Each structure stands twice: as structure tokens, then as C-alpha cells.
Image 1 (cartoon, rainbow, N blue to C red):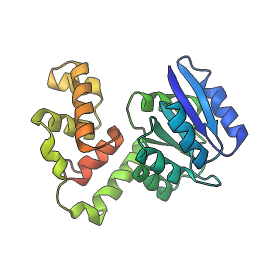
Image 2: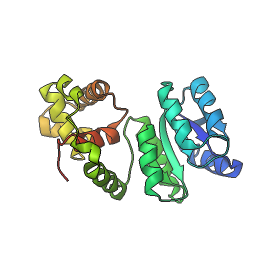
Image 3: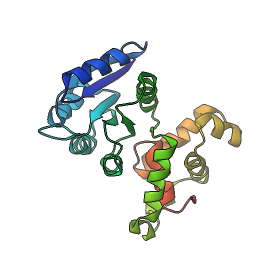
Length: 216
């Protein structure tokens, strides 16, 4: 069962999201919060698998709340939800540690798919948004810095898996490419994320581009 925490200052929005998510077998909403400060307490208390987080809220916004939730090591991947398709929200959300970014205008099925993906450890961005993130990453002055020393901690196979993840391949596709089982790929992905200090595949892709492992 996927356990979800809903964070939005509008009760009608939370009710709508709850109705959509709980219509799907295997998903349950375990709590709600009307601002980012309460969300931190709920996340620590409830340990949800996924936190659906609004960007703009009173008291504390979703970006600050996400950063604090990640800093405290609370359980739950954060799916950032916003009415506005703005690059500054997107990049700040990813920098704060969010694992996905979805517009509130998305279809109900897209919300369900996003929550499921994050619960399975996959980051979620649309292909167009992913391109924007990668372009921003490789053009950033910070990318000229020395390659991250954490790369040296990866085994040859883990580095190979990272290249394939950055290429957009799924675990099943990587398993077929390397002639290994999907469970083995999942283990490699989990290990490399841990060694690199990265939360999910989306951030692994960004890391790979920032460190010149793949080109645009």
C-alpha cells in the first residue's frame, strides 16, 4: 500500500486529490497539511511514501518545507505540484530535493502514475521538462568545476548502470542490455544512489550531465 501525505493550503484541492488517489487500489492518503510547516511535522510523524506538496502556501511554502523534510531525513519522496509552469519553481524544487514536478492541470491518471512512480523510487518529469533541466545543468557555470569525487566510489558496473540510467533506460531495459536480472539492476541503482548521496533517478540523470558522463 502506497501511503500519501497531501500538502495544500486549499481544502478543496486536498479533497480532490484524496478522491483521485484513493480511487486507485493500493494507494491511501494517511494525512493532510495546510502549510509547509505542518507538513514537516506530519512527514516525520507519519513516514509517508510520497508527499504531494503545493509550491505556494502561507506560513511556509513548499520549497522551504521540502528542503527541511529532506534535511531531516524524513521518509517520503516529494512530488511538487503547482498551477504555474515556471522554470524557477522547477529548478528550486529539484534543488530542494523534490523527486517529481507535476502541474495541477494534469489528468487524474497522471497524478496516480506520478505517485506510483515516486513510491517505486523513480523520479518523474515529463520529457520536455527533463530537457529543460539538463540544458540548465550543462550550461550552468558550476558544471565547469572538478568532477565529483563520489564517482570514484562507484564500481565499473555501477558506473555503467549510471550511464544507462542517464540515457533514459528503465531497469528492465538495462537488465536486457547487460544480460542480468532486473533485481540485480535495482541493487546497482540503489547502491550508486547511496554512494552518490542522490535521492532518485531524476537527480542521478542531472548528476551524470553535470559531471560530463553523458552529452546533450
